Amino acid sequence: MLQTMGGNPKDFNRLDLKRLPSPCFVIDKIALQSNLEILYKLKKETNVKILIALKAFSTFSLAGLISKYLDGSCCSGLYEAKLAKKYFKGEISTYSPAFKKDEFDEISKISDHIIFNSFNQINTFYDISKKFNNDVGIRINPLYSEVKNNKYNSAGISSRLGVHLKDLKGYDIDKIDGIHFHTLCEQNFKPLENTWNEVRNTLIPLIKNMKWLNLGGGHHITRKDYQLNELKYFLKKVSNETNCQIYIEPGEAVVLDSGILVGEIIDFFKPSNELSPNIAVTDISATSHIPDVIEAPYRPALLNEPDKGHKVILGGPSCLAGDVIGEYNFNDIPKMGDRIALLDQAHYTMVKTSFFNGVKLPSIAIWDSETDDLEIVKSFSFKDFENRLS
Image (cartoon, rainbow, N blue to C red):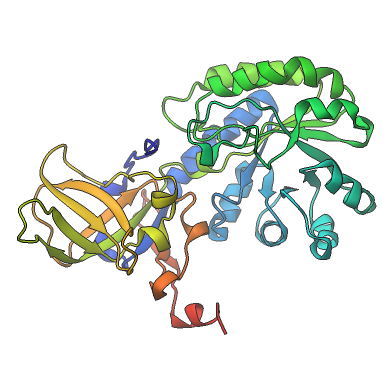
């Protein structure tokens, strides 16, 4: 099970959970702004360009705020690129493991950078990219990563993501404007430095005439223990060594600990078998609302959970046997109608929700922790469920 890297409650203890519909994602725009200020300061001190990874967070109600601080968006295909163009400001960098021919013209019109995953893809789409004045990049696989969970290791020997670094040597490198690699997942600074040390001697001779180097995402820059000073020195050093514009593409770091998922206890029971645990059914579904809980898997932190208490398994309302959030401590036995909140639920949640089993999606709310203003910016209905099928 992955360790929960987020879980700082910030000011969410002051939010009256009963003011919200349930279930509901809540983003504190003050906490978000605090993260953005850290990233903005990093930009100014290093001249790095920072793009938000829309695959992690694309709540466009906050696009205006995010765009004040960052340089643009990185996208994973046509729909994210269109969302970036419509709501966010700045550059648009689009990467896909494989672009489709019937979508590529539109992607290319929208994007500033196109990052390809293979030589075959470059050869297929290069002329179209240049027709629309795109910078053309390629993703490399350094075959080095310190990610422990294979599901999140994009730099393994069998990874489909990126060209093996040694294979660049036989390619017409003058056609390429930039290099991209991404090997991190919720990590501190040192794995980035170690990755660079692995690829540095091979890359530097190849990229001497390139415009940019994109170091991807997975940087947990806004986490309290992140080695920010070391990162600043490193980014300046790499910029000087390569004479390239350096990009990074954080997703989680933009919204780390800025969101919660509020739910309600809708049933509670203790089976008569003494070995059976206390069980609470909530209107939060792991499979429908926070699928990384099952996919990773991981146990999200619970607001105000005591170190000891009544142990309760929290589960979701779907019919899937594995729709379980985790085991938690409670000071008092939960009652029907009690509200709970899971912490650090802004990233890889709203972008991954589904209507499996007809479970209603959480509403989305924006909260200002300084003024206590609260706005429900999105609610979902049966019509949303119906419109996904025919």
